[in-house]
Image (tube, rainbow, N blue to C red):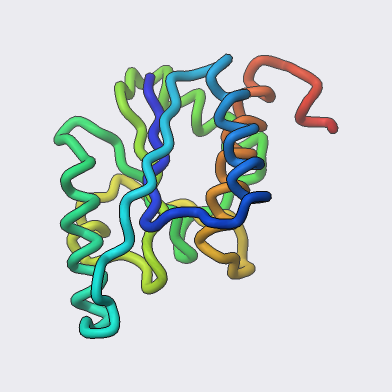
Length: 157
């Protein structure tokens, strides 16, 4: 199985980039993982919220193939404990999913076309975090999930 995390916009804070890179490198021991940061939509000041989400959706649709399983990181999504998320990942692998894509949307969330394409929604917390921080939190939880599956001690750290 291959896992891809797609996010709108670049991460600029050095500490976040270092943290994200740390977990991406660790993930490579477990799974074929890639992180795709799509460029921010240009001229957003001239766009309505709906227009901005539609432009972001165009970028996202180009990254998704028909057979991909797409999960949106969304505040309305299902919440998992780390162990339950690990079990979720295991079920995807056992279920012969070839490509699992997780998406972090832009500042206004997702266009309706992306919701319609999604196979599910996951929420990382009831709290609101910046889209930049969610990237780090998610790759850390992905790493934690695989360390749980492998019975490694990281989960208890």
